Amino acid sequence: MTPEQRAAALEKAARARKMRSELLSAVKSGDLTVSAVFDKAESDGIGKKTKVSALVKSLPGVGPSKAAHLLEELSISDTRRIGGLGPNQRKALIDAAAK
Image (cartoon, rainbow, N blue to C red; front, side, top):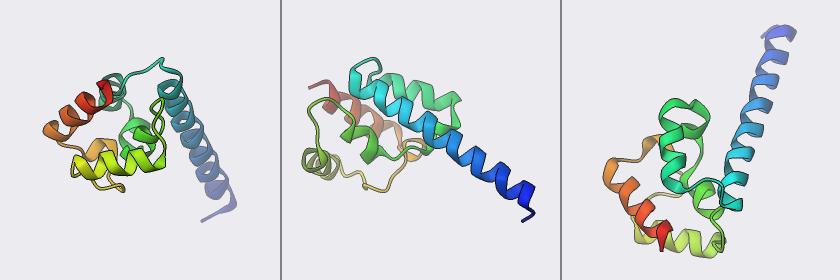
């Protein structure tokens, strides 16, 4: 890669991390629901590439232990990304987050 290409790639990655962080912060503060994140992921590449485990951990009152238990209960791999979830997994996660 040329230095210009490397700089452009680093800038793109930094933007993606910032957008992902803002998305998860909105979930943590209660401004976005899980279903809203799924809706947003349909049009947003950053949302699709966010890990489901990060989304679950950002829910209010859910830490790493509860998140791991919930994902195991729903048979969702902790390495799965939001864009890779099927409709049944999405519905199960929305229902579990609403509890």
